[in-house]
Amino acid sequence: MEESLVIQDLRRHLTGSSQPPTHHHDIVTNTHNDLSNNNNDKVALPVAAIKSLLGVIQRTKSETMMGLEMELKKASEEMLSFANDPLNSHMLGGRSHIALASGCELFLKYITRCFLELPDFTECMAQIISRGQRFSDISLAARDRIASTGKAFIQPGARVLTHGWSSVVSSLLIQAAEDTHFEMIVLEGRPDASGAKAAKNLARAGIPTTVVLDSAMAYVMERVDLVIVGAEGVVENGGIINKVGTYAMAIAAKELGKPFYVAAESFKFARLYPLNQSDLPVLGKGLSEHLNFVDTACWISTGGTFGKKGVVASEEKKEEENVPGLVTLPKEVKVENVLCDYTPAKYITLLLTDLGVLTPSAVSDELIRLYQ
Image (cartoon, helix red, strand yellow):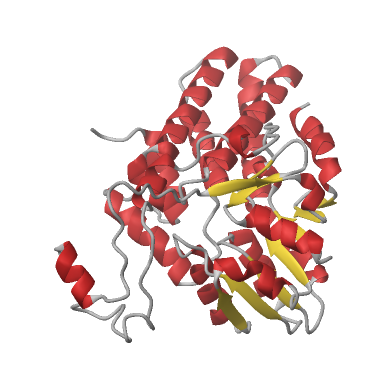
């Protein structure tokens, strides 16, 4: 079945191509290459969604504001379904629908506000297209504004700890490295190797980078000067939702007196109010099904054979013989690789955003301002 125009637009904006990719494989390959080729210029998912909604407005045949709002809501729902589809989960990181929902909701509010100011539909449509493009441009520039503001927090000779892959954090660090020498320590980011991808990107920019075990976060915390992470979503109480392990890292940073900074665009501000981990929405269901494994083999335990061609066998017995460090779990053992966790506001020092440097307590005020 042919995809709708809004999904075709979403794919095109995500890949940065002039033509929409014709196959699912194309966008998976392009997205993988974005990380591998140190390309920080690709748009974030919420920005791609906003640009896709602009396309809906430009193509609309509706003659009333109610009709246009219905079209935009339907398009938003289509994009959310696309983001939650298991076939697309690995391409989108499996966790991005919080930011996607927030971005779409904020854009719809922006459009509604325009109609309230200009009740005439024809006049309003002209303003909507103009304002919508401006909103898209502002959202697209958010990453650069955060990098310009946030780089001042990294002092010469600092040792910085981060966790997971974040394009906004990567941009900030790379900009900071242009005139400040500092070192990076990156958690490896199991099970999706997001930390390893981040380390590769930072090293290519000439930043001295060390990758450590996720479980070593408290051990290395003594050696770092600050922690900086991204966020999948910033919630009403000033807390964040991010890659699992962020909560534990924030606790360790607080205990050892290390500043804990979060870099996030304002379109990730979500009208959610979790009190604990069980309050989080279901995140990346499709992706978690693909990451239901435990890596029990390592280079030392296999005598240097792990990772080389020819050691993987189809039968369990052969597998154990060829990879002596591999532990094969019985079917009765359940493997659960959680993707995200919730970090309460009390562990966060400051939020580095395109709206400026905010304390966690200021988030609720900004949400009121954004949606009023």
